[in-house]
Image (cartoon, rainbow, N blue to C red; front, side):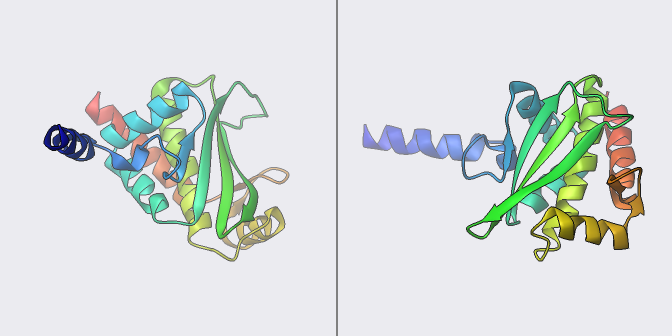
Length: 167
C-alpha cells in the first residue's frame, strides 16, 4: 500500500505539464474564477512567451490575483492594481475585460503579466504612489492616471502572434 501511494504521488508530481499554474496557495498566480484559471492554463500551454512571464513571476515576491470582469472603462481592456504589501509579499490584482474573445483575453493577460513583471523587478515599489511615480518616469503615460509600457504592448502583440500561429 505504501509503495502504491508513493508511486501515485510521484506520478502526480511529474505529470503536471505546467507547474507554474498550479491551483494552490503556494502559487503566486491565483486565478479567482474558472475562466481566469482556464486562460492561465491555456496561455501557459500555447504561448512560450506567456509561459516565460509566468515562470518569472513564480520567482518573485508578488501574489497576483487574476479576475475576468465585465467592466467598461473607456477603452480599457485590462488593468493591474497594487493592493498592498505585507509579510515580505506584495499583492496585485489583474483585471481583464470579459467582453473580449479568448485569444484577446490571453494576449491581454500577457500584457498585464508583463506589468506585473515590471513591478516584480522593482521591490521598492510598495504603494500606488510609488507605482505611479515609476510609470511616470519610465513609461508612456496614458489618459488620466493610466500608465502604459512599451514592453507590455510588445508582449501583447507577441503573444497574439504566437496564438495565431498555433490555431
